[in-house]
Length: 295
Image 1: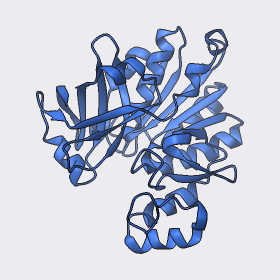
Image 2 (image 1 turned 180 degrees about the horizontal axis):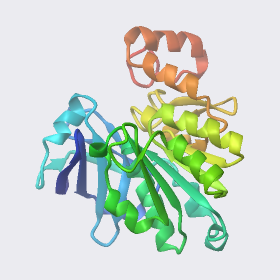
Image 3 (image 1 turned 30 degrees about the horizontal axis):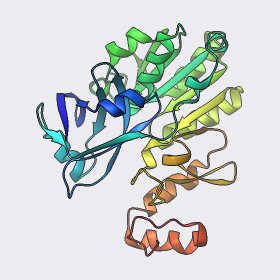
Image 4 (image 1 turned 30 degrees about the vertical axis):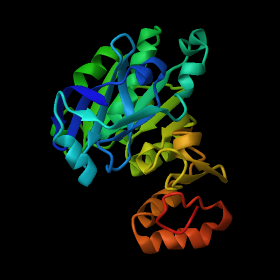
């Protein structure tokens, strides 16, 4: 059992938990995720690692209520425990494998949308701990949905916050801020890491391609099983079939077929849609979810 040592609500339907998971904390890196399971019969829920404390054996997760399982998770409190807490899974951020001296010479921009702040935070924190500053853009629909603001301020070089309705800081989309930084403040960036809703990452990638900025996106939103078995996170990257949970979750944003991924994500939610995907994808369809006749 994996005991919850802290549980608090960050915003409407958004929650943070610290979980005692020493083995995961000892081996994880920014960019990876875990799979949590409340009880023996519970759903497997992939969640990005928001933070970790190796000495105390603690993993921090942030999740948004989107269905019955995450609704049930939101009722859990300090002292409760998860039946399973598996990880670390997925590939670490490519930043952790780069030479630190080279990273210090790079201009890095992070773009976080909604709960995408959670997977962005450990990467920015890791950079800060290694003497590398990065600019961060955080976007949300309203002020009330901004999370981890103080934590992000503490580790970022510059933090830019924007809200769709203008209720806090700037008004507009994250892409508006990117344009302002590049065109008005004449900032230059070597790489952009964008994490958030699929539609947000799509338009960030379209813009950065125009601006000539290398862009990495994290495809956490399309995961279901989290082990490459179900095939729900199948995505085309540069014309090749990839699975976000085992090949990613990070990919070159300029090569991801976002339209296909978003359409597939919607189709996977229904029995008819899964059957159609099986028909279209043939031998390359995993079907490991057990719901569409695959193996």
